[in-house]
Every structure is written in C-alpha cells, then in structure tokens.
Length: 188
Image 1 (cartoon, rainbow, N blue to C red):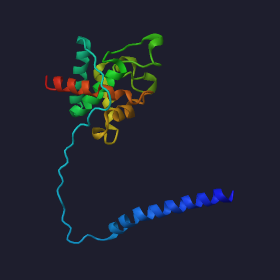
Image 2: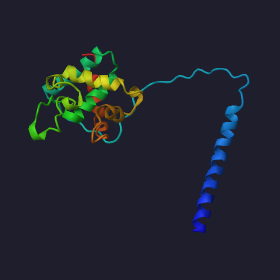
Image 3: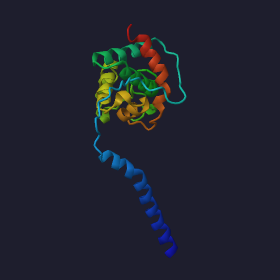
Image 4: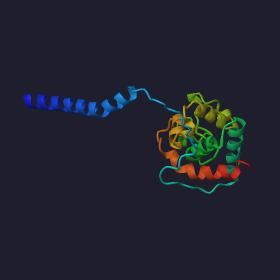
C-alpha cells in the first residue's frame, strides 16, 4: 500500500513540475507588457474544409435533381451562402438519397419523413410540412443557423449538430458530391 501511495504522489509531483515548466514561461511572458507593439494585419481566407474520408456518389434522377434545386432555392431565399446548401444537400443525400420520403410503414425510422428524415414527434413540423422540400430545407437551415461556427465546421459536425443522428459521421461521405451539385446548380 505504501508503494502505491508513493507512486501516486510521484505522478502528481511530476505532473505539477511538467505543468510549471510548460505553463510557467508562457504565463510569465503573457504577464509582461509588450513594448512598442504595433498591430499586424493578418489575412484570413475562409475556405470550405476539404471533404473528410472516403466519398460516396450516386446518380440522380429528375426528381432528385429537382430536390437539389429546391434545397438551393430555399438556401438562397434564407440568405445563406453556398456552404449552407452543401451541408443541406449532403445531409439529404445521407438521410434520403435526395428522395422526398413519405410514410414507409415499418421501414421508417420512427416517424421520419421527407428529404431530411425529420420527425413530426420531434417538433420539425407536420407530415405535410416536412414532405415539402422548401419547408423541410428551411427548417434544417434554421437549425443550422443556431450552430455557432457552422460555416467553418467539418460538414459532418455541422449536420450532426442539427440532425442528431445515430450515425454522426455518415454525412461526410457526401460532401464532394454535394459540393459538385451546388457548383453545378447554384447559378442556374
């Protein structure tokens, strides 16, 4: 028992020493006022993060393409940038493959409906609202706007914060296709 106590105390002392070595000079430097300090302009370019991990891609039919255009139109109407459309489309690709899903009986995840698999029981809207592409996109974007820093987050983190999926990392696989679709349809 005495040996365990001594080893524990040595660990604590070692951590305290390491913390003092690393934090001490930094803390001392931070407390020293700068002399003749001049502000320096720093150019920060905000670019969308690179897609994470392996990417998936599907061929789209006319209905799916119309849903892409509806998501982009709702994003523009909300006054949000292309990045919001990319996150929205990638989310819809994961949730429904850009298909406006109605009630599928036992195949539904609870009462999930529409492009984003939103649930009436979770307050996303009525079944009729959730299956309207403009409404469901606007509801998703409203949630996205409430996420601090969503513009600079990894897509999967931004989407997961809004959607609260059982598969939080799955959104990332659609980022490249969503980016390509927004690039193709944003100005059309």
